[in-house]
Image (cartoon, rainbow, N blue to C red; front, side):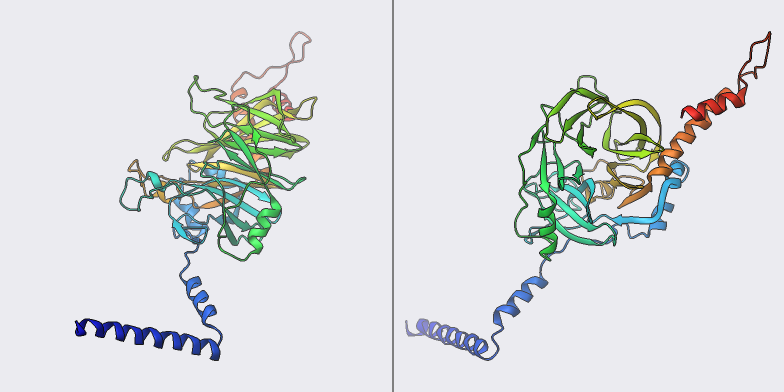
Length: 416
């Protein structure tokens, strides 16, 4: 029995010695807590900010289909892009890492470029990535719009798809599409600034939505745009005639009241919408995509003003192909920002064993709005001219003036 009591005396001696050492350290240096905090900080997981493709901007462009995306390349602000953060690892509330985030929405809000993303790691079937037991909360990546530097990750109080973002500069409100609950959530820019100014890579708390959500009246909000006091809400839809509002976009005023008469026809597979003014006209741009190995499309529509000040579609101008899996878009000045989801681990590595994505883009790409609209307008004009020049040239006959090809060309371009 005496032998069994000896180890406990040794343990007591070690414990007493340890306590004495800690007390002595505090008296002499007063820095035990600081050292421990710094040690914990060193072990934190930070949101990844490097290119998951390990490619420069030029190398990325060279890796894409040159013939298919020639029109798109001609509109790019070459070299101006933002590497999407968190594609490899995302810091969730300074306590866990998520490798399954998929970027979706984008907006420029003041000095920030904000990207939304949702977690899909709980749906992994490929052993290349550990499958999460639970779906993690959705996040916002915040970047400096001028320097293009990553600033912080914000964890939202939702696990929804966060398919789109839009910014109201008058009230400094950021709209978030919440398709799971059929509402548009609202955040204040002030709350975003507070998270950035905290200096943390990710805060320890989730960011609550500041205002009452906008009920979209049974309409599923997949993508959004705010333009001149109106919020435009679109629903992603496949080519299924049974889907409610399968190719319609609805309009709400700044108070969240639905304007029932203003329903705008949009293409299927729409993922993002934005509005721009060019040559005294207003245009609607729509990003549409579906599938990992199918090119996306950017369509342009000429709009007209309604009596209530909202916009209605006048006619389609045209479209051209963009890299696969384009998502939300936003316009600020002459810059068109496009978000892509193809470089997420889930699609790039085929973590569901349904095939890897092609024409992969791991950046927010920036195009010129003027070049984009002009390219599509000119492209349609050229195709029209090619067609009409095949017609016989007409001339004056029996005192009647006939329009020749050049007259028809001028008329078309003037009307465009």
